[in-house]
Length: 527
Image (cartoon, rainbow, N blue to C red; front, side, top):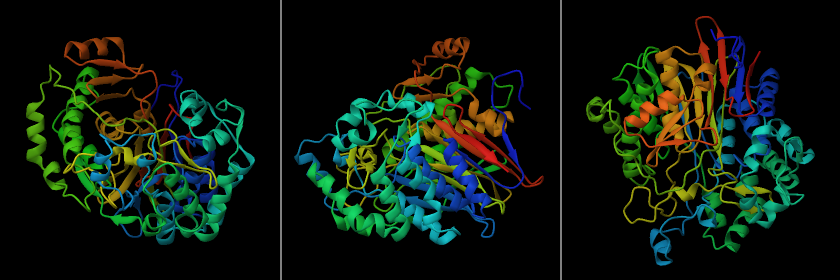
């Protein structure tokens, strides 16, 4: 039970169904679908579409999507990889011949084929119960009539004016008065509303073929991109088998590479050998998480890529002897060398989860990668294009080297907690590279400290990344001093670290317990 003297949120508690998202309008859209007889997949798609309008810097149909779905009837959870690939003309040699040492974030070369719309349609076709016209209706109305800007997007917008201004089409939509909209002002996206209507009527063809695809390809080609209409037409999402690892008495499920869910499992496998119960000193807890994180991220950056083109030794990385070897190398009194990162960093996306009345559960993430993605905007269709290709390397032979039809390493990862063969919690942690470490930290808070989802989400966050230990303002000064004494280079964050949602399923009592990120504007809501 939380301390009611403290100005914090209570966990959401309900008996029938629940949704948790980063924006109240998205949560409301999901609940409306559930109360109208829709299932978890229906509600997730409706909520994601609303977020494309309400948080347009975080997500959009010009981005990618991953999902973990645990259908009650089928039992075993399913994973959907909705990430897009590089153009078929994209080769390492092409970029190296032109002097590229990497793929710039704010460039058309960071744009891979967006996978989100196909992922939505694929989920809906196999597991949904409603049609796109109904599910996209709330997003269409918001885009056309205008969404009122809430505090967190307004805060984020203050950092983004220069990026938006570089693209005339984007500036026309997102800076209608020559500035980014403030809290309480309306933001309208009429071209996006029309694109949503086309998708509602035609399904995936409405995005990957015809006028929308032509508009996107035309804009990319104007900027020197290698994209073709054939690249869009051939794109398909892929059903894959989730990977899993044991932590305490639960199983943690993640999507396999090209996402970094494997990294979250590697961190948890390491932490499983330490006592992180409520009696554990907070400095020890942060230190152990930091050391496990650094070891896992070193492996990520050296070995992870698209498994359709490069081998990824998943079983080896999750083996007990591998985890024990990492544990033996951890000095509890001294920080190891930091992991330097020479690729783009970002901390923003959207994550949502839904559990319906039949206890179907979905863990769902949709992203533009960097805020407003690549900054490349297709004006006719109103589509902001993501920057996921910026994760590619231009190093010949690297597992994540750019190649024709190859998917880049992804940071976005939905998670699912299971026990005794059934799903007990869809969960996710937003925040770019932080997500894998965030998954591990959240699960440890829940299972080791006994916190409820809301308490675990509200807990102070830290992240060992790019040579420093990032600490939120809520980490105390005494803890910071002890971590510095152990040799950690401390980086106090100005902006909060990531965001999260989770819904715990208490099968025995028939109760849902949800948590939503206080660092965002959203909420968990059930009935």
